[in-house]
Length: 327
Ligand SMILES: Cc1cc2nc3c(=O)[nH]c(=O)nc-3n(C[C@H](O)[C@H](O)[C@H](O)COP(=O)(O)OP(=O)(O)OC[C@H]3O[C@@H](n4cnc5c(N)ncnc54)[C@H](O)[C@@H]3O)c2cc1C
Image 1 (tube, rainbow, N blue to C red):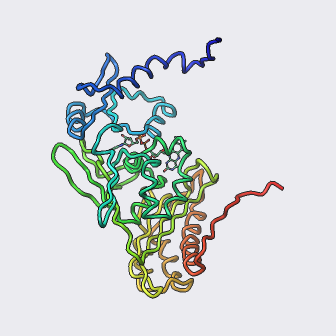
Image 2 (cartoon, helix red, strand yellow):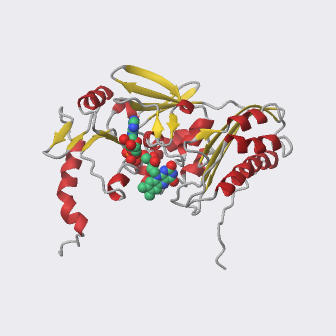
């Protein structure tokens, strides 16, 4: 039988990849392997992970590598020291409690989808547009949060759902509301030697209303120009509480605090949200970039609030199912 055709990548990397794969799956007590110029560790417990981080403060954590690997492919950087989180039991947990759901930072989107969709059905539409199936099978929630991209898709949702992060280091464990995690453009509240262990999502109350909208140039496999997560609790069609998480509107994923305040106590009607729509301009001064102009972003954010109202009153989705007709 003829040999399968091998490309240059196969020829150069096949042996290394095989070696790494057997190391990842090996039942060895030593979690790391190293050569003169590289170090790779696969801890199995969070204690091992923290010990490794303390011993190798210059190492990078890697989960699914759908983001980190871009530093190599796009910026041509070397990543000589890596600690892989995908086998750390504590970072892989998915647990449902009475009032909350806990998802480990190294759980992939595909693995998290069933429990997320069970409690927050509105997440499904977003998840199916997050990257591609391959990215969702590999990428993790922890990676999406830690990379602190202003246009990551899950942070706006987690902000709207009032998620909390469990952060762990040798100094101990702390719980941080996600709205205190993003401190500046691509900066986070993580201290050196600290990792995200898990994400806690309070279950929604019976009278909560959640809508999530992702605006991007392509339907599939595209990063958001604007992502909005609108989470309200209502009584007699009036807003009791409001949390609005946005991506693409500022240097970090952020809540629209003034718009939230303007919504509280108002009826969820077109007239009732007018003040909140105006307040979005005080909350955000978005940038113009390759994905969208500042004007488009602000106008879209206002219109997404309106879309939520229309979906609430019409009790039907206004989703555009077909982007283009090729008749
Ligand atoms: C083709 C493609 C399409 C994409 N589409 C989208 C999209 O539509 N929407 C979107 O939001 N993103 C998208 N992404 C970006 C990426 O897939 C996500 O951000 C993903 O969630 C990253 O997770 P990961 O496990 O791959 O992270 P990694 O690449 O492994 O890590 C990312 C960063 O997080 C750090 N990190 C990882 N785990 C932890 C931890 N437990 N504690 C502390 N730090 C940690 C790493 O050190 C690194 O700095 C896309 C990427 C690609 C390649």
